[in-house]
Image (cartoon, rainbow, N blue to C red; front, side, top):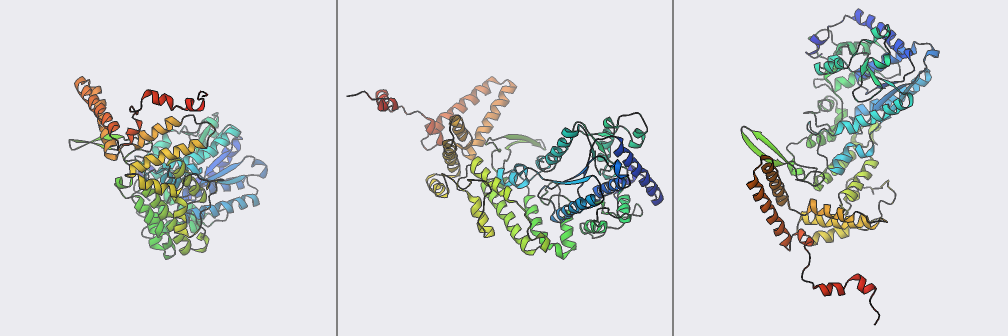
Length: 558
């Protein structure tokens, strides 16, 4: 039990808890039978969601068969980067749940959800180059968890008009959680059931899902009460609550997870399971504890190593000096009275995207060799993700040397089989890339020329070439300057904008003149890519007319 729980919720004795559970079962039954609105129960496999589902399961099982009239959907989201131990536990739980519900004639229907391949963790990190999530750039939660869940719930609402979301959230988790729950709470369900209120407009409103209300049956429970219920009440779909308890205990640093009998007794409540790649926490304490407490789980070490390497900060040396769309963006920071203006680092550069791919594939090979039999076919990264990463590198990054199949074969010893039809049919490949690399002076020159060539290749396969000039111009906008030039140009624009905002006309004129001078210098420099934009004035007008395509095609007869 955490110290913050005592002031939030007063303790209950065992007899008081038993009495309250009986009242809660009756409340769940009354709410279920109140209308035809379907229920969606969130299930993560953790202690809170397990207690919630057990209460609902037992309440429905106690109803006569003719009153079990509406579906109860049980949904779990697999982010594809879940802790493998927990992910395996949850998938097996859902399998047993489905069989048990059919055998007991209950309208409970489990669903395992997953993010769209374009939203997965590795596609965004390796494919697009998104840096490891931070509190200032938490791009993962919405893509991996919220989108799949909301998509399912919206489909339920679209079919039925409304939905009741049943969650295992508790006020005792934190004071912030308690405040959020209270903000959207209208009244207690037991009171609303006895009133004239329409329940579809009561309970607790959902912030993001219209026509959905949230019901949290254990919102007043404490950690010790959760464990007391799980240890005393058998799991109705056949999963062992003792195994769940042992999993929490194994994820606790001191391998201790006693039942709480007073405020001085620690609890397993602080054991948090989540994505093994999560960098939003300082450490993955649960996985560290699993490895420390159980020799049979040492095969998880490669995963923990990757997670810790992702969390290295600062990581400017791994990232591009431009943002994802190729622009240099500056930010101003003031510390101890000193103001600094720096560029915001962007996505991982190609080298590091390939390094992450190599590390994950290597970890997958090692885990398959050392893990127990049930994990021998584990996928740390799926074939669908690899195919999408390859597509992004080829089509969006213009890296037509196609390094992913080579890296895959070097690490795994197997030939990569792309799921996309025609993925191996290419006009440009590694030979052309090597030739281009020999001709170009530096990395930026190579990047520009590869973008120009591949942009032409992409339009070559289209029926209409509308927009090709705009696409080629974007190549110059993002890749025609060296790092130093691009950052200096961004600073000059920043200074110009600042001077204009301050109304300093003289400074504005000076900045504009300097800017135009630099543009002219770049165009005049024959070694600079911008010189390609300079018109050729050395050709005489009559010669240009003579050699035009129209004159050659429709030449006058002699």
